[in-house]
Image (cartoon, rainbow, N blue to C red):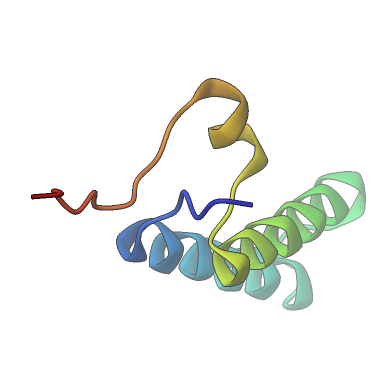
Length: 70
């Protein structure tokens, strides 16, 4: 797997995952929507830590800074 997530993208994903978890565990969002947010938060957290997003790979996207080769 080639890294395709930059640091800013990873930070945003971690923040969203934390927000989703807080919403679920405080009871603000419950039921099916709460479980979906919790699962989505887990996926966002996992992709942030491994710096690879399968959807980015499918669409050929990358938020990594590319170093110029000389």
